[in-house]
Length: 169
Image (cartoon, rainbow, N blue to C red; front, side, top):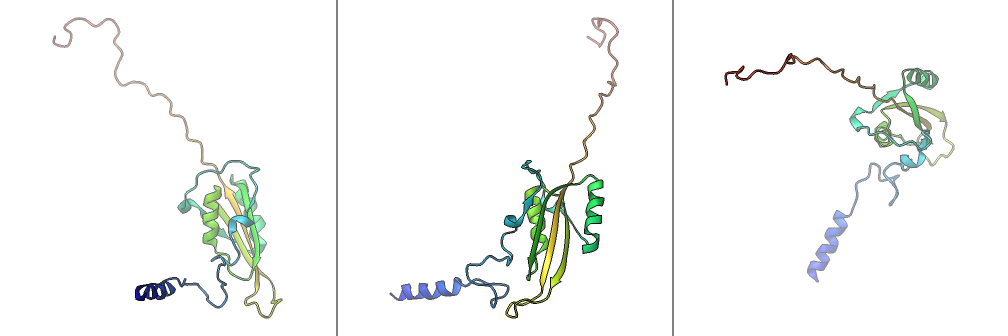
């Protein structure tokens, strides 16, 4: 009985999870306050299969709201293709690193990001200001590798039949 009571007390201490802010996070809620980013993602590839992209090769570029379309058009002229977009309004920060992870899963190698404040507080009980986040996922196919041309052989071809004993036999 004593062992059962000790296990119960031990499980209460070890069962507590650390949260970034215990005052706002409710039990059972996801770590990301805006939810799973994959649910908010809108595919722009029309169902084409995603390329394999490693997380460390995904680049992130942040722009201002006024320069977002200009930067996007510049990237499209450089050979990038749109593969998806994520737009969300939230009071909590939508982490660009989470977007890089989602971009790697979706096959993007560039994320163009922009965020800005869109309004004041509408609910006095809710902390923070409402921020709009735009993330455009772009993919640039790798440059085609040139096919190597056959190189001439360094050894000459024999001009006629080989004679017996020519090599010391």
